[in-house]
Image (cartoon, rainbow, N blue to C red):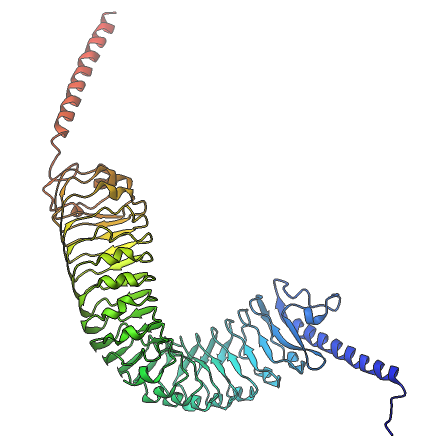
Length: 552
């Protein structure tokens, strides 16, 4: 025979008592935690027993039925808090997320928070925390996310960090860590994000054991002291989407199967190292690559046209290398490409008219290469282009009449080429700030319509075959640089241009005249004669009036 509760009211009363007692206890724990904090901006004013607001609705608090309503998350990011981080917060028996980022806490890493046995996320980033990572860091065994970035944490990374085998994200970037990186990172098999970037005092080879982390999606090691070669084991990071090894002292060749093995890569950055050898093959195999940055190394050889398989590529940076051969034509027709930087290499080939297909292209820098051919007509059809720079090449022919039709074009540098013909009208370049066409074979006159470009500040037309006068209208521009030296210009130089420029910016034009120049203008003489005549007349009149006054 089933039993029934004879006192349902009493049972309900007992349950209510325990629920109220639990609620009171959690509120008291929060207030104890608050008491150790300096809240200079009074952001935690709602944290009060006198408040009518339930503590689950206090600033930064999240409660979840567990099954009773309990505090599970505390988010106090960017509240200008300082003082002590009290261990009392660990009395919240269901707390899983603690975020104190972007505050002013300045003491060493609070090891006592390891008492928070249910804690999964600890974010203390962007504070003033100092001192080393304690060897007892292994006590944070429940953590999945640990973020100490942007602090003053110093010293070596302890090997005990390899015992945090539940970690999915570890961020120690932007600190003062030193010494070598232990191989124990290979034990963190659940790791998805590893960030050791911007630790200038690290002096370490790249641990090859990192290549064991099959779940790793982001490996951020830039701007630290890593040296040596990129381990072959990195080809095993098959889940990797972001690999940033830039601004280190890495040397040797990139493993040739790296690109083809990491088919999920979205961003590959190995720039500003001492890497050499051929361009890594297969980087476009996964077709998801958005950012490719190999600049400022010693890469050599050619880039195959397979780069055109990177259909999602937006940023292509290979400047400051020793790359040669024909520049890959397929790159110009990628519909999502925004940035192409290839300056200071030995590339050859022409800029094709298919550049017009790169509808989102914003910036092109090809300076100091061996490009030849004409400026393509399609250039003027790219309406998002704000910088086009291809100086120190072998470009020839006339400038297309529409080459500056982009409404956002700000910088054009085609100096030191073999361009000829006249400078076309540039009336559509309303945002043009800098125009450099020096050291070409341009002819014709300087167009007065240049004065209609309201923000033009730098104008260099030196070392050409330009003729005619300098337009008076150019006085209306606020030019920081105006260089027309070594042309065949003639006539009076506008006075404001003479007074604000070094004489060297006008030299090499024997037909120019004006104050401070070797030649005086021929129309200056009559003006001087008339001034002398008026002076003589004034003298005679004054003498006559003076004599009259004496007689009187």
